[in-house]
Length: 299
Image (tube, rainbow, N blue to C red; front, side, top):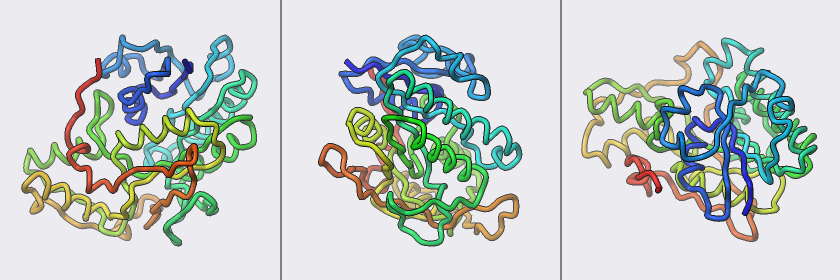
């Protein structure tokens, strides 16, 4: 039985890590906001305790012991990172470095959840050996955190995640929740036609994170779906699955956005193996039923 800590327990990815929890794992989570944690699907079912990322991590975790730490907590809003870069550096970079140091001292394996936004979008698709070159604050702080984790943790894996797709389970509203709400209300939906990702169904993504965490593999891993899509194409596919709503879609361009830089094409490809098996995340358009329907909460 592996004892695992997931930071950022109220977050979207963490919720699905709990949903796909393997049988041989005992899990605890951390939260920043107790009210948000208490309002999600898993409150009261798993041990949880507060962890404030812009305060001393070692002092908060000093007497805890885990075999594996999946560090999912982050300041993930690109806009907020641009507005408050010092806080983004503190939460995304410095706290990740402190967590890596704590893991090394405690003998814990660290799984750091990173992002495709560490790339500049100019030379896709990106494999694990390609050099990051972020164009915005969020990407830069995540890249710096990757470097710190690889420098400070004794046993680690950096998992770069593409756009994760699925319904929320009590946490903050995500893209699919927002999209379906606007469809239901007959509201216009603006989508980039020149921002390209390799989106993945979050259920499949979470299972691959667990496979990575429970393996002995180290280094960098790319977890993306097997298809490159821009946001507008993705919206059309979702509308076809829903049986309508495409008339509400309005294509826009990254060139129209002046607030901060966004990479054009950060498609990921996975070249690594986990326990001699390929990473297996299907194209998101092949599993839209999985993406659009809220999963039953496991008992």
